[in-house]
Length: 305
Image (cartoon, rainbow, N blue to C red):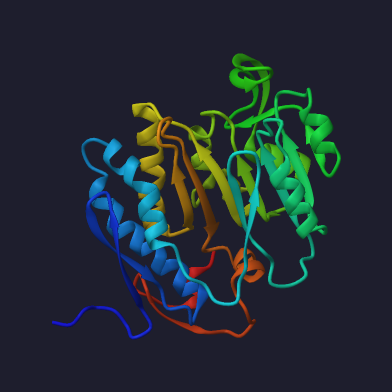
C-alpha cells in the first residue's frame, strides 16, 4: 500500500528526543483547507496522548503544534519581539474597515505592540493591566489603557500581578466578553494577546464555539496566549478546551513553545471558522470555491460560522 500523501506533500523526517517523527507541510492550494488539515494533524497526533497522566500531552504539545503547522499561500506572518518572546500576527490581505488589537497583561513591556503599530498604523490598540504604574504611561503613547484585570468574572479578586516583583493583591476584574463589548465596541477583534498569570485557564471557555464571545457575536481572529505551568485542574481545563476544539476545529494552532524549566506554554492560534477573520487574513481571492474533503465536509461554506 502506498503512502497516503499527495504529490504536493513535502515529507521531512526530524529527529526529536530520540524519536523519528514526520513533519508535513500541507498542500497550499487552498488556505482554508490547509488550516483544517493542520488541525486534523494536531488532533490525530495528540489525542492519543490525552489519557492518564496529562503531563504526557503537555510536554509534547508545542512540538506537535509546530510539526503540524500549516504552510499557507500568499499570506505573511509578522513576528514581533518583546523582551523575552515573540508575538505573531498574520498581516491583513487587504485594507480593513476597522482593526482592533488587545493586550491583556502589559507587564511593563510594550515592544511587540509598538512594532505592530508601526507595521499596522491603521489598527487601534487597547491594553489592560491591574497595575497602573509604568503600564499606563507606556501603553498610552500609542493606544488606550485600562487599569483593570480581565478574566472570567466581574468584581474584586486576588490576582498575581507585577509591580516591583510579582505578588498577590486585590484587583478590579472584568470578564473578557464584557470588557470587549463595553470598552472596545467592535465585534471583530483582529488580535488578542493574553498574559494574565494563571487567570487564562477560566477564560478558555470564552474562546469555544457557543462560548460567551460567540453568544455575543464577538469573533477573535488571532490569539497569542501564555499558558502558565498548570495544576492538575488547570491541565484538565486545557485538555477540555482541546477536546472541544477537536470537534469544531475553530482554532488552528500555528506556533508554540514551552519553557524548559517553568513549563509555561506560549501558543499562537488563529480562527479557522469565522468568515470575516478568514477573509481578512487567509482568503486570497473572493471567489466561491469548493475545497477538498475536510472532516467529511465538501462545501467551503460549511467550514464557516
